[in-house]
Image (cartoon, rainbow, N blue to C red; front, side, top):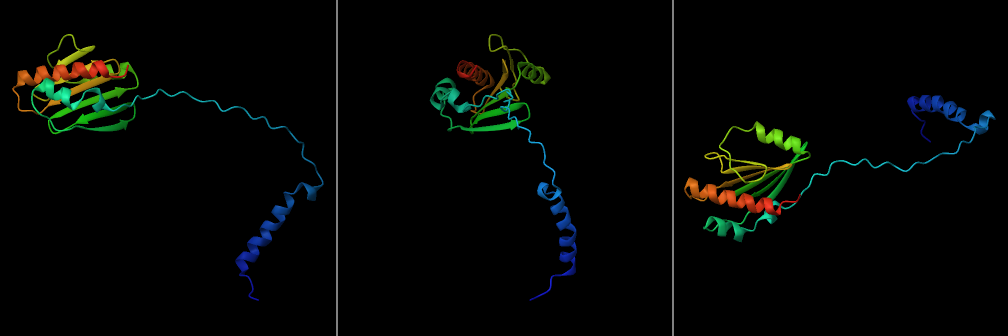
Length: 175
């Protein structure tokens, strides 16, 4: 039989009295039995970030009808960064980007932070023509909807098409 190393013997020798001292039976003392009260866990309600398929807000066929040209099939992506969810429906020809903020005030602040562009009346809470950088940005409640087209149409036609696409998206966006 092989002997234990001295370190193990030392550790075991120090721990055994501690373990034995913790036993109620050894000390002869009884501990008072207190009933344990279990409370129902409180569920904290967090603001829900609405997520949805941004490409379900407007069909490819509807975009083609509005623009008047064929577009490639868009794909949806969803990204989260702190207080905002980015819902994107993009293809080679069209980009629909939706910022979904937890609070309307955050959306307003983000929208107002943007560079000054000409206003578009009658679309959402506020809207602007972002050409030549894009086409349309719309503030709508706690959402900011941006529509950019890369179809080769002239600026006026792209602005009209982007405005109509934005209007269709706003009609279908969850409230």
